[in-house]
Image (cartoon, rainbow, N blue to C red; front, side, top):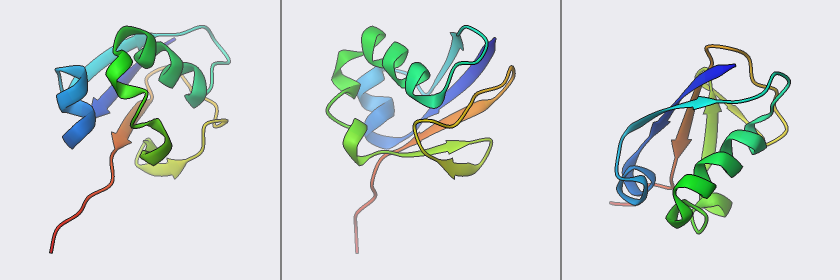
Length: 81
């Protein structure tokens, strides 16, 4: 299956781009996509415990199943005031 990954803020800076396309086996889960991203962009690993993950605009956990054409967004914490 093919999915699109959107990277924001620190995730975008660490990966070096704002969007990626991943090829994953059928029946993959969010955790599988994150592992593939970390393999290709090791600097993302430090952010993983702090990320909110959205799958097709809904917050999900690492065990959420993926489907072909899904959009996965990595949302680092935001601070400011």
